[in-house]
Amino acid sequence: MSSMNIHEILKYLPHRYPLLLVDRVISYEAGKDIVALKNVSINEPFFSGHFPHHPVMPGVLIVEALAQAAAILTLRTENTTNKEDTVYYFVGIDGVRFKKPVMAGDQLILKVSIQRQIKGLWKYSARAEVDDQLVTEAQLMCTSRNV
Image (cartoon, rainbow, N blue to C red):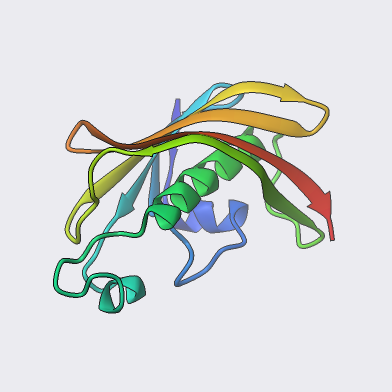
């Protein structure tokens, strides 16, 4: 099990502010799973327009954060880093459930495990938690394409 700081994460994800949604990797085991962290700050640009009187993180961004954690896990599993000629895309998102809102000030824990990998198609089981409580769960499918 290993961890990664933000400088290492930037080698694996092409995303940058305001769409970089992984602040730290707490642990990962290549070929198996990853646990990552997103600090949800009131300074996030989406809070000014998404229920400004009750700052809730948009569900689509929680799913995106899970996908970014999955991308890091995939690249670590393949023993490679982000390449400018390759992009990882969603090809499916199933069974998404939002159990509880994520608020400004929360620490979002992203847990993703590889379910299977066949011919460049990766399927993951993903869940996001705040204070050890499930807030979002989904099955994600991704693949890479040369651009």
